[in-house]
Structures are given as structure tokens and as C-alpha cells.
Image 1 (cartoon, rainbow, N blue to C red):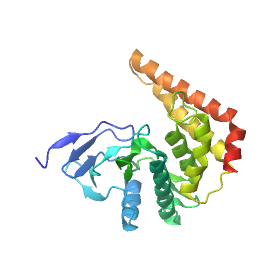
Image 2 (cartoon, helix red, strand yellow):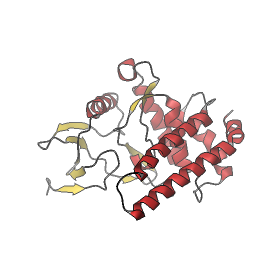
Image 3 (cartoon, helix red, strand yellow):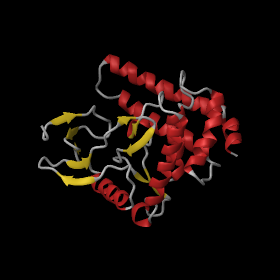
Length: 241
């Protein structure tokens, strides 16, 4: 049935997400007017990776186009897909760097440009989703965040070895294009601490003992990743110089 609602696994930014035919219906948030402005501009500029805003339904939910693919699995895709994603991030930033969107900041940043918000078909990137937390900011914040999550930087048992991380970091930066990486390490650590702060707040929520342990373990892992980056500052700066 065309009108049958098929729930998606709930994300953290938006509690109600369902598929209806070739569309996705999502609860509105306080940031929705801004997000809709972004989506309309991306569509107007031919950024085909973005869902297309189609309106508001009878339940007061936004209607956006459904992107028929799968969530990126970083353990499966190749470095070429990550390079493609970095190029897509550059285009996203360039389109939204107008003053009317970002004021005195460099551009609009996604703030969660990572595998779970990227849609692929095989190795081909076909979609970028979830602009709920987009805001004016510095390009390097998104770039470091993407590199962190693509390469599992500092994550114990991650897909890439230290040698591979140091090898692929400049490759990803090159795929993004011209950008000053002088503050790369400091910005990366700032992004890691931003996520850690949010995760620490989630530990304080009214949750089960099992959930509490799981969330505490996530915080512990992020702290270890921050330490990993701090201890390899010189190596990272050297490969990006």
C-alpha cells in the first residue's frame, strides 16, 4: 500500500521517522525552518545527494524524498568512497557559504557528517541526510569530524592501523580540497570533546543499569580516542604539513 507507514530505526536528532511510498516523514524540530531553507538551497544548486523537501503532511510532519540505498558501513566501503564523501562535503560547504546562511562564519556545517548519515549503493555515495543539527561554523570542524569517523581514529580495534590512518588522512584532505590544516589536531580534539560532552549527559538520563554501562563504555572509548590523538599530535601534523 502506497500510504503504509514503515518505521525507520530512530535516530538521536529526530524521534519519529517513517517511510511512506517514495517519501520520508519526519517530526518537525525547532530547527526545522532553518533546515528547510538549507535543503531548498541545496536542491536549487543541484546538490543531488540531499533529500528534496516536498512539504508538510496532514500530521504536521515534513515530507522529504526517500533515497533508495543503504547506510554506509565503514567496515565494508573502500577509501575511494570516503574520498567521494569528502568531495561531497566540500560541495555542501561551498553552496552554503553565502552570508544569508552563515553570517560571519565560513559556512553552514553539518556537525554529524559521518557514515550513519551517508547513503550508498555498493561503493557509490548517493545521499547525505540529517541536517537537524546544522549550524554556522568552520569548515575544519566538519572535515576533522568526518576524518575521525571515516578512519576510526584512535578507536581500539578499528579498521585502520596507525600507519594507515596517517597514510589516508592527507588523502581525505586532498579530496576535500584546499583548506588550512594548521589547527587540524586542536579542532579534531575539540570535536571529540563535543561528542564526549553529549555522551556524558546521556549517562545521566533515567535509563536501565545495562544502558548506563553501555553509555559509560562509549564515553571511555572516546576519552581513549582523544588521548590517542594527543599522543600522536606531531605525527598527524607532519603528514598534513
